[in-house]
Length: 335
Ligand code: LMR
Image (cartoon, rainbow, N blue to C red; front, side, top):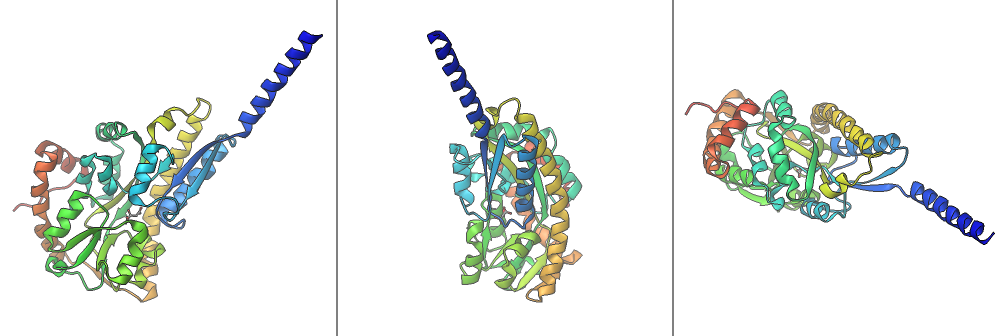
């Protein structure tokens, strides 16, 4: 009888533990710096919905938008420490991770072709770079393409010389720093979450970004001029903590991978459309004066910025640079 009671108690404990673990979902904290209405914000919410649905609630995703948990630099540190499990930072902000190769994608006018850009980020060529990130404890699960940049500023930016003496906000890469300096501007790294105020108070005079960010952050309230220049590209990496991702149970991982794949498709479709719409909506406010670079102006910008490609050759190596030129479809102009 006593033996039966002990067995019954043990069975009850096991059953209770089973229920408890079934009730305790794996939590994925997803931190990002943009508005929930921006393409990244929307895709983060789609990922949450799909991951929770496909895993039948075994996974719970908490999305923290608008730098509400961490700003640019802190979120990368938090990911390495495992305080968050998912981010989607711009690859121009990888400097603090110590993987300098990613800066190459910021070379001026390198990534202007949408098809090449997307194919390149999904190509096996990226495997080597992804491995470098893994040595830092983070794994890129996908790349999200947010399209090309426009410039906003407190004065019209039509020709390269218009940048002289301008304090320009940059996201962080060494190439973006060199680009601003080449134009005679003064670059300053500012976290995205602090950018509106920096533009409002004149800490910086301008910045480059995608229209959907300018729209959702209301930069049109604090910047008078916009130049459609398409000189660079905003690519995100959906980034996780390697240890965490590898520890996901076998009955959860494929479903979460499916949510990654589908939210990536969602992002790429949404971003392209949102950026076109955002440009129209900004125009409709009547608060910014628009200028689209003419062919002659664009030629002058390319000529003024090619020295950055030359300068960066020693940083990245000629072979790597040529590989990237080929993959991105970039043809350097004859000098
Ligand atoms: C920026 O810092 O301007 C962008 O990278 C913000 C973002 O994540 O879209």
